[in-house]
Image 1: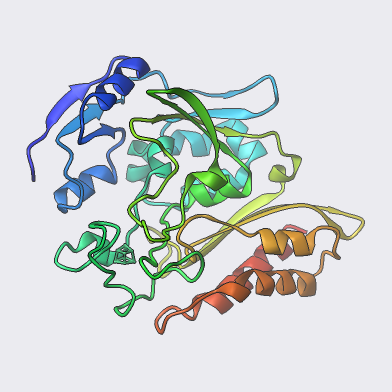
Image 2: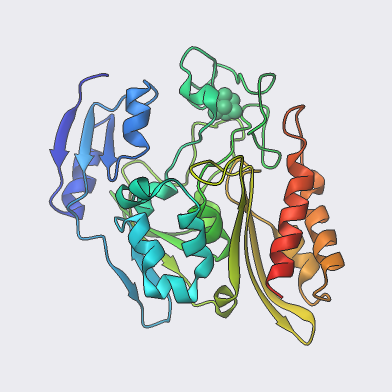
Length: 325
Ligand code: SF4
C-alpha cells in the first residue's frame, strides 16, 4: 500500500479547503469501499481527509415536508429511521438489501452515493480497464461479463453501478447537496451518476473538491406505496443481477403517479422513463406492466454472458408493479 498522510477535518470549510489545496487527496468517511480500493492498488490517495467528525449525521423533516439525510448518517441509521421507514419504505428496503449488517453500520449515505463498480476486472490490476486507467481498454467487453450492464453502456465500459440505495433515490427524485470551493450546489440524483461514454473514469457530476453534505428526499405521496426488489445469486451479501425500485399510486383501476428505477442492469442507477410514460393513466394490470417493462428493456445491448438479464428484468419489474396494486 502506498503511504499516505492522514488529516482530520474539524469543519466542513476546513475539509473543503484542505481538499482544494491538496492534489491527490480523498475524503474518508466510513471507508468501506475506499479502503478496499487502496488495498487492491486501484486508488492511490496521497492524503486522506477524515470527515467522520463533521456534523453531518442528522436525519430530519424540513418545513417543505421533504426529509434531509446528512451525508455521514450511517446506512443502518437511515434504514431504521421512522421518517424513512414510514414515508419511503423503498429506501429502507434498498439499504437493507445491500451489504452486511457490519458494513451498513460503518458505511455512510454520502459514501454509498460514491461506491465504485464491483467489475472484477476493475479490481484486477493485471487486466486492462478504462475506468481504472483511461485509454487502457476494457477486459470485460470480450471477457466474462455475466454481471455487466445491458443499458447505458459504451464501447469503453459496461460495468454496472453497484448501489442498491441509489436505485431507490433515483426513483424518488432525490437531490444531492454539496459544498465545494465555489459554494453550495443541489444536484438531482438522476443527474449525479454519469454514463460511461468515452470517459468511464468520470462517474459523478461532482466538481473537484466538492463534498457531499446531504441527500434530500422530496415529499412524494406515492413513496408510501413503494418497494425495492432485488434478484441476486444468493440470499445475502451479493450485488444485484437485477433490482427494481417502484413507487405507485392507483386510482379507479388506473395508474396515477409512478416512479421506477432499475439496478444491476445499467451503468448508473437507471430511471425507467419509457416505462413510466407508458404506464401513466393506463390500466393497472399485469399485462400493462409487462408491456411497459418490455418497452423499457427494448434498447438493451446484451453480451453472451448477460443476455439473461433482459427477461429477468422484465419479470422482476412486472412482479414489483403488480405487488403494489
Ligand atoms: Fe473497466 Fe468498465 Fe471494462 Fe470493467 S467494464 S473492465 S470497469 S472499463
